[in-house]
Image (tube, rainbow, N blue to C red):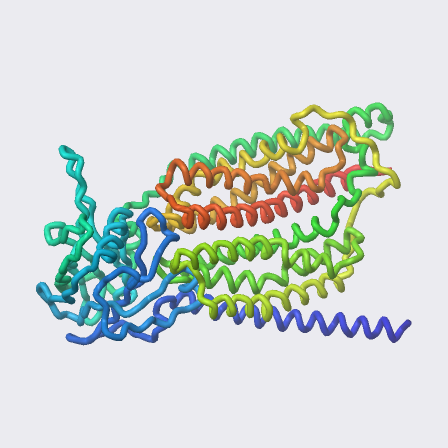
Length: 609
């Protein structure tokens, strides 16, 4: 027996040593990720310094309907002028996930070289090409390019409607003017202008000869190179100004905090009266039965049903909370500056992989505290609880993107990279975290003994059932964030820019605090009516804000956006469902943890017989 104990002790010490080393390595990898995200588009090694006449890289990215941000296609899918041998730019993982497909553009914009009506190419558009371009103009197609890592946009054409006759002309712009600003040997700003007067009519299905041309004008500016991205922080791409309503946000937060404070005051007064009543040793049994929550002290710490699923939710929710905090920290330090291509997606993939050990440790240790026996099955469930639905959603949406030949369809090589990250990083860390949780030997600390048989729950009114309680629990936290949700949605599913991450982080903290307090309050009211099945209720009430966010997604799609088409609708609701599900797991974990602390505190403060 001693040899077995010594071997177990050695294994435990070895595992703890491995985890410490793994933590150091993880922090090192995270630092590398931060550096890679911060560098972003500068991964090509360019120092962005040029001499007069030097070639400045210009890449064409994608084209697509203006109102459908997910439905984008390769630039040369449309019959544009193309160089003889266009080369694709090598892209990072985040850029590919973002749908970027950069390729050499046909324009030559050498440093400080003005050009006036330079002919790009002459080509005769076939009937099929004319029909394709006419459909693109009808859907408000835009193009996106990158010049020295600066983004630029423009529309392909214009739909000219005659109000009197009711006719419509489809005009294709055939001349582009580049207005470029420089400071010494650096490119500072670039703008694109199209002239509707220099356009070709593509209304009819016939072969049309077109001469495409462009012009370039260079202007000197005093804006330093370090501040050239500030322009994109203040305005959106087309351009539409993004104005954060500070007063509305502060007003919303103050209202929620006042309501929270009001509920906290009431709750503390009620608890104080309960503690005074229970502190008298000569109180009668009838008095105990009147109040209720002490009366069920033998049942309140009875473990919930479906222990494995419950522990898996707590583990996954803890991991997602850690992921959100890390992302906010990176955003606050300035990693996700506007148009740092793919930085957010790279950070999400890598940090999620690195934090999988948190999910494994939390789920397994808590499952064993609940006296669970099959911890391996619990670990597998934890690993699949969020990744499983996300993988199924991705598989369906990627198939849709392939059918549409859109840039959102991931190449086979990128899918292999993601699978390798999951197999070589996420899964091993999850298993190591589970083994560490198994060897932590922590016991569930219950202030009161649990009786052998559960007490019968009395008949309760309808508004104390699960669904009404979830509705009440989700409304208050949602009211704290719904104003910010519009701007976030307009940034993710539109062409607006969101850069005020400090305010977003404050709103996130308020969301966590309000969720925790509201769940605690509802847990107390549940215990006060002698309903001791609070475990699952606290998770459902805490996570109900995710359901409110999903209903807001439906409202935003129909009332606040112009998105249309099967592909865009599938992408919007597919990925937003996964995001809302993630919020449900994360906030459900917050609600349960807060309720558990509260319940332990109040039952530790009284004498339980």
